[in-house]
Image 1 (cartoon, rainbow, N blue to C red):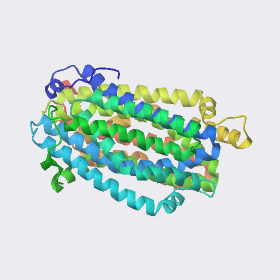
Image 2: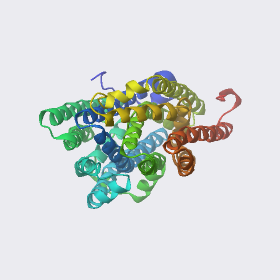
Image 3: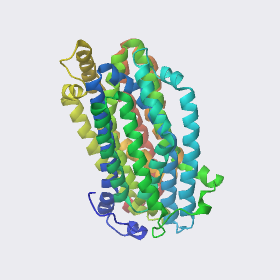
Image 4: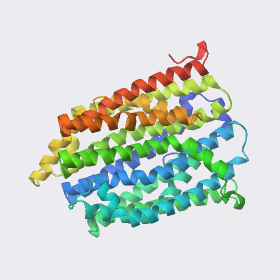
Length: 462
């Protein structure tokens, strides 16, 4: 696609300039994560403009459940890729194929289990997340098809993480880009050509990921690559799986936390506002995720550099990598703040046609208000996200989990329980930037403590 699919050797991680390495690893990940986020936004726009404001609210019910399902696959993929980088830095290449095989077997069993449970309790789950009589049929049609392709989704993302961590970031990016492009084409055909509506959009996601998974499987079947599929690697190693889960737990709890927050917010907004307020939060969340996923791409670029050098005890390079990533992450979230604060109406009108009916106009008004309140503390979130993931990459999952939970659960849930009682739906919007500010302070304290333990005066970050 954009560049030749090269393999970056592990030794380069210990010698190349940090800025160049971060660019090489992060740019493909940023392009891939941004492309995926942009598709989700475009998907919401297509559905909102073809079906209406209530369909945007239905997606607001479905998306957190999608994230809940993806949390399990993410835990395996990110945990395994982080472990792979650590083992490579420690010169334990023999463990690599075993890690790869366990990614496949673990994701297969997890994906199948979630498929069975999800289909059986689908309506109950949707109602639990705030679905109403209007939004339930649409959300059900969307989620039913996605659940049928759940195993494919888990394997697709897990193998992509392994490919990136093993020195093929450009190829991993290109596979995601091809999937996103195919997704967009199929989405347009199914929505506008066949008139399949929200179910057609879900089918486009599954089919595009199936094609991408086939390409990944072919890659790992080739023995010329550093790691590849071996028959003996597919046996589940409980000790290894436990280690993968422990490292990937931070990412898992980030997504679980986001799902819990969506659960609380949807149900609180159902009381203090209604379906349109849930739809407005869905739009705001799409925009937040766009910028957060760019920072996530940065983190993915940071991960192999930090993991290898930490395993090799090159602490100076570990901290230089962290410093560079924090600066870039802060710039990105600051741009998100400017966009949300100064162009809220333009953002809202992308998702629904303002001239159609009063329902659409009301959704635009609510979304504008939510954007300007929720994004107040957003410039500082880049630091929080980068630093909390850094602890995960240096094999300190407990700290990473706590910092991840601090933003989405520890601080936010109590605020959501009390502020809406006084301020109504505005209390929901206010809770988010207040919790963000508190989590940034907590992260800074952990950051200073870690700096004292692992740096000398010559390598101190501050």
